[in-house]
Image 1 (cartoon, rainbow, N blue to C red):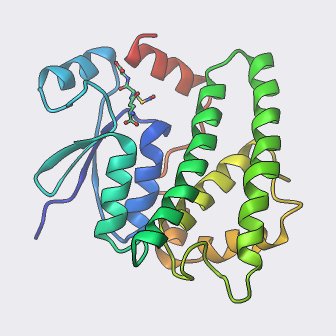
Image 2 (tube, rainbow, N blue to C red; image 1 turned 90 degrees about the vertical axis):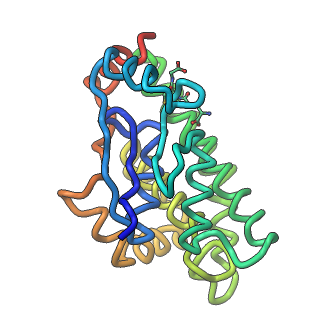
Length: 222
Ligand code: GSN
């Protein structure tokens, strides 16, 4: 039996969280190699496997893969969650890259002082609704369109659900103007592999809190 993928990261969501979503959504079990201190991270760098001295790193199929989007694309392609042809793949990239921009802004805002953070989160949520949720709502309006691309479950659906739940953690009514996205959220959350991942006891990480901010600063020393 092939070895389980190994995820090298701190015990936080960060850039690795989307990998935590994608592997179980594809029904793949994995292990984590967690580092908790700056020294652990330095030792990992000294080990020589981190190509750019940065994480996330995923060890799978005999490779030490870095660069988050490369890792996600590899897993999506390997487990048939990446469209049936180049055009579907381009569309999945268009959707997932846009969602990734929003996730990046959201993650960055967590590191800001409270007043600044609150202001930024408002701007991000406004942008999420006017520029992105509106686009996905329109896609889902097409008759019989249960999924974002090719009417087949893909990485785009997984990535969007991850961001929807992130947005709802910040504002419970984030989807109130988007009935089709609400239905999408229920539908995708009920796919058995995702349902399992969303239950307590899975490897999903908790939302970032003050402890998260201190931990990340301590490990990465900024
Ligand atoms: O997406 C990626 O994997 C890369 N383009 C960026 C990876 C990155 O910045 N990783 C950070 C930790 S995750 N949080 O942002 C990192 O390893 N920083 C340490 C450093 O010396 O750059």
